[in-house]
Image 1 (tube, rainbow, N blue to C red):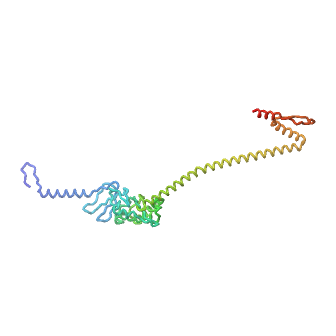
Image 2: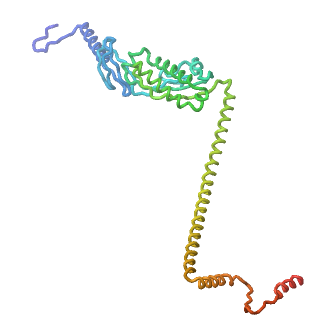
Image 3: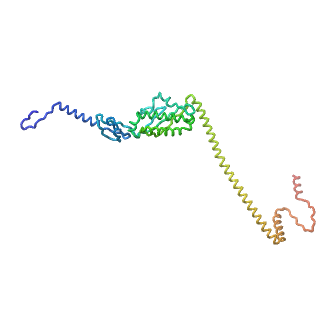
Length: 330
């Protein structure tokens, strides 16, 4: 360092090596700070490893770790719905374990049913990662293990049923049973994975028998259609017949009550008349005679009244002769 003149401010000069050394220190410090901070996305959690051993699980956000390889961070998507496809594959997926290579699809979906037939089963398993530490450390390659477990469970479930049950009427039962078995298996492995759904996509017979199977399905559909039509006619006719029967029964019951009431009225009338007859037989008999004649005489067209002492003579029915004469004239 050179001395400054009297009355001037002293001047300090730093050697070039010191500048370089200080610059490297600043760059190294900046790199340490830069590599010590990391960000966990909102849909994920991070597992921190210290010297290769599990340390902690951190939530989403900005965090700090010890640099220089002391702490390592593995980000796991715990809030994302993941899926694995079997027997087919969706193109352009980001998950490398979502589908197997296309060359393996044929063997993957070919399964033997309980009645020794072959069915081509394509299905999807949807799952989420619940425990990232279990997912990373309890099972080696948890996604590959899940694929093997899913295929094993599906083959067991399909092998317990006939080909007709797997392809037609038993699809929902296959999904429910496969889901339950896979959940139990994953839980026993402590994989940190939760199985949400097992869904069958395409279930078909082999191509060589596809035409025959379609004919059988068409025949079954026609049978069900005929049964539905018959049930419709049954539901239409039976209520009508029941209504008619109920109406006839009510009419018969009303007629029966009417006849019973009329009979009871006649009995009451007869008993009252008998009581009067016992009291005054002659008067009652005369009254009955007069009432009967009063009812009958209005119904008689021609009336001839004669005395008891007059003998009746045969009369010529002029009305009938007049009618015959008119008919002959016509």
